[in-house]
Length: 410
Image 1 (tube, rainbow, N blue to C red):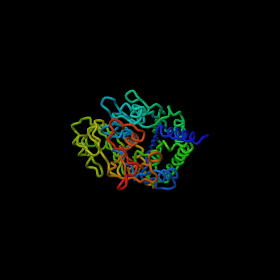
Image 2 (image 1 turned 180 degrees about the vertical axis):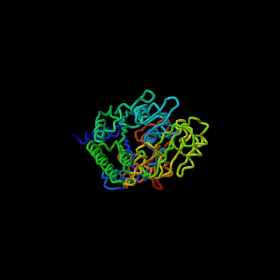
Image 3 (image 1 turned 90 degrees about the horizontal axis):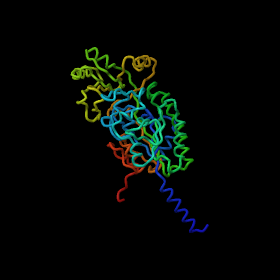
Image 4 (image 1 turned 60 degrees about the vertical axis):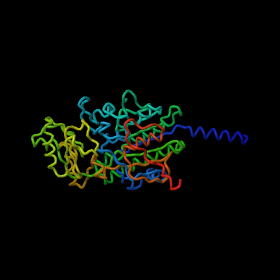
């Protein structure tokens, strides 16, 4: 082969590589607190932090709960806008939402455009695997590739296999956005507390499967056009006391439908004119705050009609649970046995235990980058920038600065 022809072929190959569609893989590790990555051997996470970027922490929205947090990560906005105000809530027209009973229909309750819809709308194929709100179409559109229905028995090995299979599709069919939920350490954090050996072991098991994904991307030489972002929806904290809000109100002669959510309670009063009295009763409990919906602190971004006439918010180490709930029934016994139980959903501005993780590796991420705290609402616009699209329509976030700022004089 002549030298000239070789140069032409090299140029064509370089142009082809440059023209390859960028890919972002966004993984969410449920319930992984910001400091978990510093506990024990986690070689896959260590590699990402060494060869890529790690933030001090990720700040979730309020409430720092799985469904609201995942939707914030996908939409770039807060619960008062996106409408998923809890894992359970009531809507005056659509009825009750319960993540266990109709969680797969979350898109029906979603009031803000999610990332996979923004991508598809702008010509980028998307793939979702159990991300909140992705199982059904949103306003008549869905991800080109999606796994549904949700099944907690499906492990992360199957997810890695599917992600790599999606990336192995021909260039014209390959997704430019992949979003996938992982079990993380949430269940063990609830059952054993954030400091338990079982919680550390759960994350080590997740790290091993993450290593399989990294190896698959290595084998495919994917890093030139692929960015891997890993986040978590919230952290975890130990609680030592519980309150049954419904019973507390009933003892004061106030009837209500109460949706307990460990750190919060949404209160739908039978007689809305009792709102001020309900607030007074709840505030009499040490460690418990309460507001009428219209008086909620603006910084919480929670003033949505779905939360009820009154909202209660606990401070650690208090958790809000109905008396029949598992955590309330077994909490005292667990503490006598020296075992902790975990909760989340608290105000992340007041409780750093609620903060999650953000790490990144690959295209557009310099090695060894250290970032301050980043916001959950900034994840969606960051992903959008990496794949070359506009962020979701209601996004309020800004792209996370993955490239270091220029030095003086540049």
